[in-house]
Image 1 (cartoon, rainbow, N blue to C red):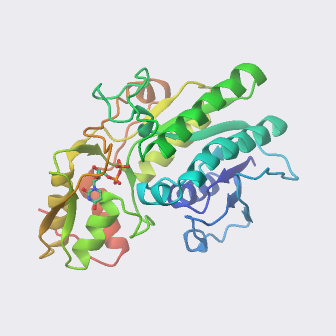
Image 2: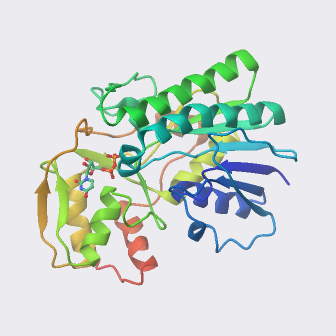
Length: 312
Ligand code: UDP
């Protein structure tokens, strides 16, 4: 039975990853400082192979047992959080990644770091293949997240090249699903929360900016396929079904049947205008593609909250 350690394991993605790994027969050590993660995300996990370790991975991490996989998911992933805690964002991307890599090296474990489509910044190449170097403003408000993740990628490749650590990098595009925090400030979380409360749906800018939303279970399948492959170079995982933010808001309105109106607010600084993953590498290397359409994934979120979606 392999053992996986998941940093950020009590967060949105981390908790789904813990569950997915347990289902696949792994033992799982979940490490989280609970700054943005929460015990509520993992309290339903009853599996005997699951352990929770409260720890901030920006501090060194020692574990007294063999580990086969280190999944490094600790981060302040939502814009609201990293704008509020910019130094924490930089620290978890730098010191945190350093400690997680050090642990993987010591344990001779396969290491997978959760990188992001934000490494492409406000992209000038569309859709974004892994070969694109990106268009990031290092000193803008998003720089504390984007550059932390870019540094984490550089550190990961250096540990691979110089220290022989068996590493993988996944560049995760916008992902949604059950257990997103209703107040995390994300488009999907906000629109669903606002629609169910009959409050206005807040579109930032004119809503013509695009994102491509991937259902969390599709992502988990891809992540574990990547971890179990021998690939070292970055791999995009995301759903190439590109939508404007206005389309997303309209869809949430339709599925919830809300009486909420749409209001337009200021676009955040450096908000990327377009984003869509080129997933050719994931298809070729892992045989992976997302399977859950946006309408279906949003419907599952609504059902999880006890609401029956209104489908066409
Ligand atoms: N957005 C919006 N209204 C909201 C929250 C977000 O219009 O209430 C926009 C945001 O400006 C961005 C897009 O939706 O253009 C996706 O934002 P999110 O925070 O979900 O993800 P990210 O910007 O990190 O891709």
